[in-house]
Amino acid sequence: MCPDAELLSAWMDGEVPRPWSDRLSAHIGSCASCSAKVESWRLVSAKLKAGEPLDEAALVARLGRRLDASLAERPSAEAGPRLAKPGTSLSPWRGLRLQPGLAAAAAFALLLLGGLSGGLLAGLLSSGNRVAPATIASGSPGMETLVRYLEAQNAPLNITIQLPSVGSGQITGDPMIIKTPPIETVALPALGGGFQGSAGRSPSEPGNPGP
Amino acid sequence: MFSSEAPPGEKELRELYEATVPLLVRVAWRIAGTEEAAEDIVHEAFIRLLEKRIPFPSLDDAKFWLIRVVRNGALNHAKRKGREVRAYERWWQGEKVAAEPADRELLRSETEDEMRDLLERLPEKLRSVLVLKEYGEMSYREIGRALGITEGNVKVRAFRAREALLALMEEAKNVPRR
Image (spheres, rainbow over the protein chains, first blue to last red):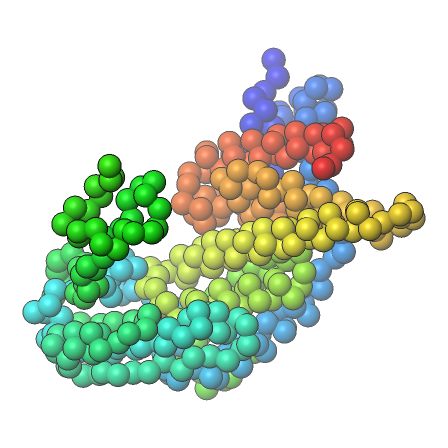
C-alpha cells in the first residue's frame, strides 16, 4: 500500500525521521506512482527557484550600510528590539493599556510622529527622509495636559505612549478611547436616497432608511 | 556593520540581523522579484522593528516577527507590481506586430514571472508555507512558529500548496493566457 501523499511531501522536505524515512525512500524507489508524485513536486520547487542567482552577500552588505545610516539618524540611544523582562506582559498593546488615574501617575514619554504625508514609514520609503519624532511631554505631564494637547490637534497623529521600562505603577483596565470625535450634526444620507437633499435630515433618526 | 560603541540594545539588533538577514533577503527577493525591492522591504521591516518597540520574549520571536513582516511586504509588492506588469503587457500585445524571437533570456524571465503570478493565485495560507519552505529553506517547526500554526498544519499546507501550484501550472500550459 502506498503511503499518504502528505507524508511523501514531508519526506521530500526532509521532515520524516528515521527509520521511516529509509522505508519511504525504499518504497519511492520501487513505486512509479509515488516517485512520479515526488518528481512533480520537485519540478514545482525547481521552477520556483529558476532564474538569475541572487548576489546575496552584496545585498546583505548594502542593507547593513543602509541600516547603519538609518540607525545613526535615530534620536534615541535605545536602539534594538526590546526583550521583555520575565514576568511582564507580552501584549503588544501593553503601552495602550491605560487607566486615567494610574496613567497620570506614570512617567510618560509621548512621541508624536507627525501624521503628515502618509506617516513616518511612507516618508522613509519614498525619500529616505524621516519625519522627526517630536517629544512633547516627558516626566509626569498628567492626563489633563495630554487630553488638552490631543484636543488641540487637527491633523492625524501617530502617538507612542511609552511607559517606563522599570515600572513602579500597576497597569490595569482595558484600552479606552480618551478623545471622541465631535458629534456630527448632519445625518448620513439614507440608502437609495442619493447624496442630495439629505443634509436637512434630522440627526435623531440615524439609520432610518427613508421612505 | 554597526559601530563598535553601540548603545544598549544594538547588540541584540546585530545578533538578530546576522541570524535573519540572509533568509529575509532570499524570501523578499524571490517574492518581490528585484534586489532593489528586496532591499527596501527588509530595510523597512527592521525600521518597523525599531519604531514599534514591541517587547519580544526572545530573539527568536523577533526573528519570526520579521519573517512575517517581510513575507507580507514582499507579497504586497508582488501584487502591486503584477498589476502594473499586466497592464503594460496588455498594451504591448496590442502594439506588437511581429512575433518576438524566442530569446532564452526572455523565456527564462517569463517562467520566473509566470511562477510568481501563479504563486500569487494560491490562497494565502498555502502560499506562505510554500514560500518559507522553498525560498526560506526553513524547517516545518520554524515555519509553524513564524506563522503561528502547528507543524502538522505546515505539513498539510506544504503538500496542498504543491498540489495547487501544480494544478495551476498545468492549467497555464493548456489554456492560453488572456
